[in-house]
Length: 185
Image 1 (cartoon, rainbow, N blue to C red):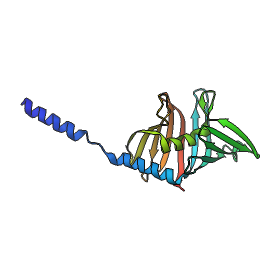
Image 2: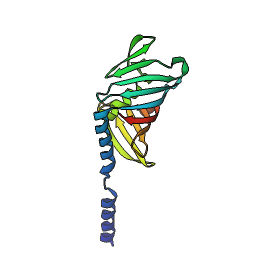
Image 3: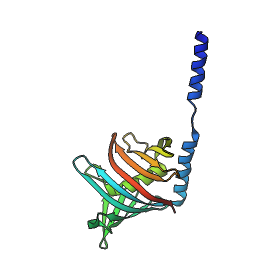
Image 4: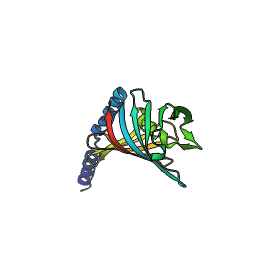
């Protein structure tokens, strides 16, 4: 009897531990297309710093090298501000004046840097897992291989286009992006 139970246990473990490489292959194919073509998308960004919450709309275009150009669409009081985000730096343009800024302010991620963080992570971050979610995928990735990396959870629709992203630092969600109109260039 013990042998039969042991045999069933082994069969159960062997059949229950199969890997679905198709999900990760889909993530890697998405990465390859993004690296080759770039993309455009609209996003509503919500930054939650605990004592204050900020929300605004933005239109973005990322080229094949990872540079992100954006234009703020909401709130109306800052609509029209444009900018460029590249590795570690950014620049805002308002009334033809350019303001350079860091991706971090007071040890916090600036909300306007969130689209670049998402694109950079999808392009070169450490993919920790990829699984099926409501017909699409849920991609978990770290923005770098460093010990204290930002963690991103990215949900795609059925066609594999990102629809929602949460940026977490030290297991606390600090920025959420609701992504619409995602298209490869």
